[in-house]
Image (cartoon, rainbow, N blue to C red; front, side, top):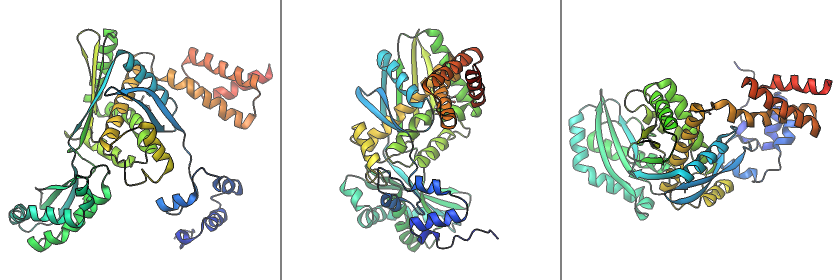
Length: 423
Ligand code: MEV
């Protein structure tokens, strides 16, 4: 039996939650002071989003620059803690702006809900019944649940069925318009449960959307001209590595998501859903692979593509409730969820190109580390309260060490500071 008794914790006021966590030794008085704010957004809003709120967790909020996607300029808001993601995105976007293009395309607009009949008695009968009643079921779902979507030009579009072992799986295809659509898809599937059971005498097991939305893909394509043919070749070779080898594909795709997740966070979208969708799509051929592909064409032309499900919303969830998410959509000046999805795809592909360029030329350490040095100096400053001269000497000492050894760490920083102070 655990020693923590947290019964009723969710019903406590925030100050009582602090008391409880203080009592359990999870928080100090200093922590409570920090958690009490002030915050730029009322804590009551957080209480609307999640449970057991103790405060906000501020993350760095920046903008990536120089993006021209489909001939339109974008400033891209990003919420992210990792050093050099925004710098690499902006630098690579500028390189593309001066030497090429980013073009995007939506491939499909339907999301999928799944209804499982775990132990189907008569699959063929169920299939016939579903075919015969398909239009009526779609109409009922549109009338009773998805009427808001229908009014905006979307709604339930189709029902499909497949057999997997002794299961029947019904796919409910829904156009969710500007919403990511998780809630409405789940509601539609749950609504259909009863009529399907009544018509077929089968028993529905679970109803839930899928994040593998291969019916709503987005494509981004980067074309760069007049490059060093050797660089193009090296980037193609790095791409082929990720296409063939799941170990490399995982890290390649992580780099792609470095460009996508920060936008999802900034716009209040569900990044776990997109991550799940992207990774499952990356394995759609039975083996985990890269979601990007780079090829060297002619001499000095490089072409990269990304295809993935990046299902996002510009209404619903917290997108319009969280003032910062609302602000991000305003910074982007986008007019639809399809456009947001395209921006994410473009940023992911650009980020991937930035990483591959760094990896195939100076290596990843150099760019990463320069910014890492800043962080090291800042963390030493927390403890040691550096004066301006010490801080300058420490930065240049770390930079010299980086040039010499390609390595810098907190331990190195501490040693250099001791040397500076000793001298
Ligand atoms: C680091 O966050 C991302 C990279 O590892 C991506 C890649 O290897 O392609 C640099």
